[in-house]
Length: 540
Ligand SMILES: *[C@@H]1O[C@H](CO)[C@@H](O)[C@H](O)[C@H]1NC(C)=O
Ligand SMILES: *[C@@H]1O[C@H](CO)[C@@H](O)[C@H](O)[C@H]1NC(C)=O
Ligand SMILES: *[C@@H]1O[C@H](CO)[C@@H](O)[C@H](O)[C@H]1NC(C)=O
Ligand SMILES: *[C@@H]1O[C@H](CO)[C@@H](O)[C@H](O)[C@H]1NC(C)=O
Image 1 (cartoon, rainbow, N blue to C red):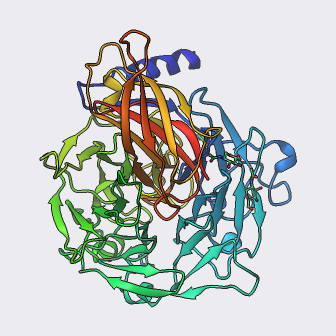
Image 2 (cartoon, helix red, strand yellow):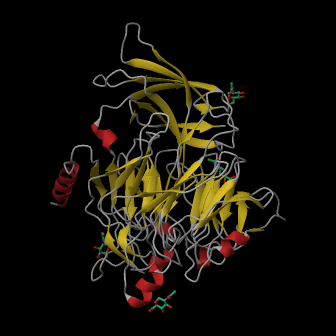
């Protein structure tokens, strides 16, 4: 009977699609935990975890892994395989609540900090079928709760800020003398209600870090611990970081033909958020004010950068911004229309994702928003979204409640996992046949050649792109280290004996670690605007 019901639900959700508005699939009614934090590993598995302080979860650990002297035999982290939909419970002992992470160059996930028992812990999870979390107590110099991580060109990871922490540090450290470095900017952007937690951190093409908190932003030379640039304040008096949670992306970086990565443009886009007073109004007076409908774009490499403000068709707080493999689109998904981040303070779930086409000055295409088909499931505080190699976006989580609450609350704890299928799933997609490089590892400044089949139905076009995407670590509406590179294409050749659907695209690998930190990427061929499934490649 249960299996029968699942089948109905599955078929029903599969047909919930309108033309070009994308499609939703319910993958699992329950993965046993609420997907507060998400990462995708180079074995294609999704790793997710919430917090150990939620009490018992809805998935059991094998008996030998019980926590707290065998009091609690449930898991607060799981491994999910997106094709078979298999769920494997993982053991995490210390509290990972509101923590951060990044993939290391060797494909192991690094996770840092959290709350109380876990606030200085460093954890590692390697991509294998029976790997489990390894926890290193006191690995951080200071406690980090609501901090942001970013993968760096030297293979290390920077951890920025956190509640009450106006500093950054590196993992691993250069030596055991190295500790945290002061970052007064984080203190200066903190207002009475904070509004500067989970700062937005992006690695610019010049090697410096763009850091945005509340309404302000800087460019930080993290090696010299020096602020090298202060950007104009984002107009509109909207706070963008927790608890006024908006989201931010570094727009796709177009690598140059000359294979010289020293003068590339970098542009940031930040969307949604709310007034800095939204949190106290919701928390103390039960007043839930509308979220902001604005986005701002800033070319952070320009000589005199200025914010360009655009209006989203739907106001949003706690939205996730996910860069799609087309290299032209930003998906804005999840979140609420009113209220604030924080326990039970969000109202009016926004069920419709929006796709923002970034436009192109050269091709005279104006940026544009497209409203997508709605999901049936609210994704409020503690929800997340993550691109996977087949081009789907996994969506899960939502637990605005202090514990797991399944009834008697406005927005119950959600343990489900869905996939959003962007409109390119409705188009005939190209297929990668083979990647010619050095052992599927790609060397800096080298050449790669990708053989692919265009779909028989799709027209012949000169519009062929190769994109490479860093798998992000996502929580609290921000995808840390998320990065899309558009490779420079040298030639596209038809490689059949007779004219056929088989092509090879010759492209240049990124020239430097500054633009492309070492590690795993998902590589896509985009034919006529439609991406293939991605293949994992390692840049070394
Ligand atoms: C989780 O477990 C609780 C207690 O057994 C149960 O009441 C609840 O329905 C379960 N929730 C889901 C989504 O499976
Ligand atoms: C990757 O590096 C980390 C940190 O040095 C190490 O803990 C982990 O075991 C390595 N993973 C693999 C798969 O080699
Ligand atoms: C939020 O509301 C609770 C209960 O009314 C109160 O105890 C707490 O101090 C408030 N928090 C803030 C930051 O105003
Ligand atoms: C190919 O990889 C090997 C090690 O994996 C390395 O020694 C060699 O230099 C690489 N060759 C090129 C052309 O990148």
